[in-house]
Image (cartoon, rainbow, N blue to C red):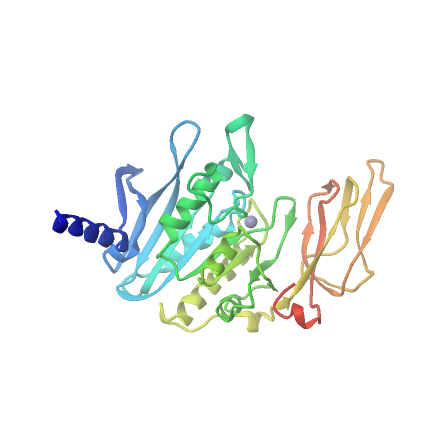
Length: 364
Ligand SMILES: [Zn+2]
């Protein structure tokens, strides 16, 4: 009896220690469905397509996330890429597709995992948020609830499944791809926690227009990874609901640079922050509408502005000026509101700048 118990304990321990890819037995459009990924048990030198089984929805079906895995012929680092955590932020889907179009698993050292459309609920709703069905419907910002909850609402459960069953053990560095929100735009821009030197190095391998040295946002994908000692950045690729080839191409250069620097692929580094002359700031200031009305923005993304410079006008329906807005700091225009309809608190202009206070050195 004692021996049997010990054997059972040993086996259970061994099972826990050795995660394994779980195939549900289903296929969707010919692609195997998995409820757990462990890249270590995949045969090396191949590219895999999976449908990752997410949370179940109101009609008793699962949300699925398409996942590409390139398992290199030789061992090496594990890179994770994710797009569309916000459902209408789509440039990153094309970046990940192009990364895999160019990867040769026979030449790759290590593993690349790409999740193309992590928030299918929001994507189908043409919305940044996760859509809840209960109580007539509600929405959740799917980039504020990580690492999720095993017994939470559907958004929290989906995040929990992605964190525990897709990414745990399968990513030692991570790029989470976003864009600015609908009605606003960014250039190619990175949020990076400069307190972590590996994160700083990652960010500066991308030829971005601007980088914010940033202490992070609780519940975001990026901050959840960084808190768990996995270097991660939030890559903001321009505008939502659009493919922008030039920004997609530069994002791809950044991912390639990262793989070259990590020894995962051979090649020469492309343009980095240095060649791009990326503007790095440690603080940002958002100039927001004080009232509702039609906004005309007088600056473009990337423009240099000086404190006091007029940057936006708001008018009523008859064309009378009701508010004028000026730059709060000397700096660079990081984002603008490109939708003229702005209600109170709507973003007009966001300025990235450098606060000389030593406490802000790594981001305020
Ligand atoms: Zn986003």
